[in-house]
Length: 134
View 1 (cartoon, rainbow, N blue to C red):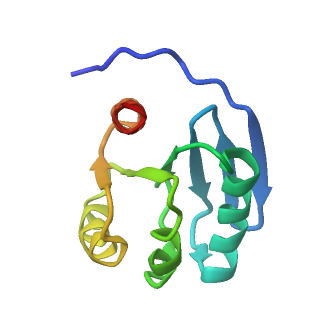
View 2 (cartoon, helix red, strand yellow):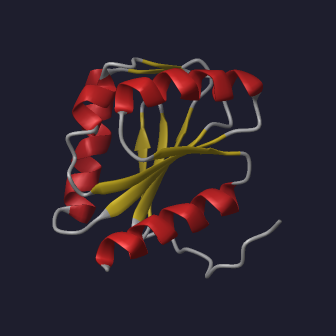
């Protein structure tokens, strides 16, 4: 099932040493390189980007997992401290990412969902942000 929504427009794109982060009006999308490792230091770069664009407003984060890469699960101890991060989505068609998601969710302990389709993740993030505004 396809969910219709207004096509988001990229506000800014950041090229990091492990991939790209695209910033939209109310969410961010990361796409990391094959074989990269998302460490706490690199997570701080992403948190810094969120503070530039979403300092005083709620936002969502979408991890677009086109490539295989490693995530240090302890980063979620810091990420869950972002009070204005209201929705965290992971998008992948790979079964291994679904298994990893279950582990990551244990560390994150906040609103996190797994999607196979990117459009569904965007719709879910926007829905969560609308709920929080009410």
